Length: 130
Ligand SMILES: [Zn+2]
Image 1 (cartoon, rainbow, N blue to C red):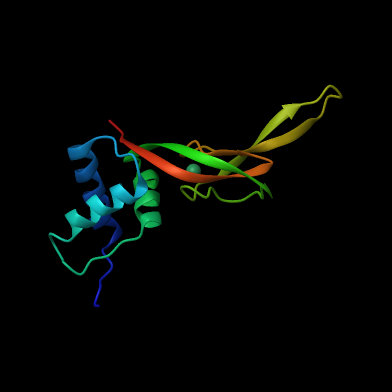
Image 2: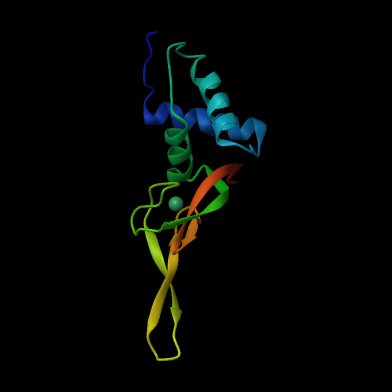
């Protein structure tokens, strides 16, 4: 099957339209389906991944996201935010000895956080940003 990749600008317009029309959307899959439906009005061969829609929605300030996670036993590693690709900061706690310990990581852009045991996102709820 032939498919084509829409530009970032096209996807952003589609996300804005979908959020404007439907308001809060309680899954990433549903958001992507609606965005795809909007994109395919212009080109029936367009395709877009859920991850790309999520990152464009958050990176372009189109939506706020509520993130449901499950806990894992794996150690969290420092790095880019797994939700939006933004920068994460350490969450620090002061110790009684005057130092500080890392308690986890938090993303400034989308609000994702994790402790030292990795929290893996399982559900995203998107709401349009006014
Ligand atoms: Zn983030």
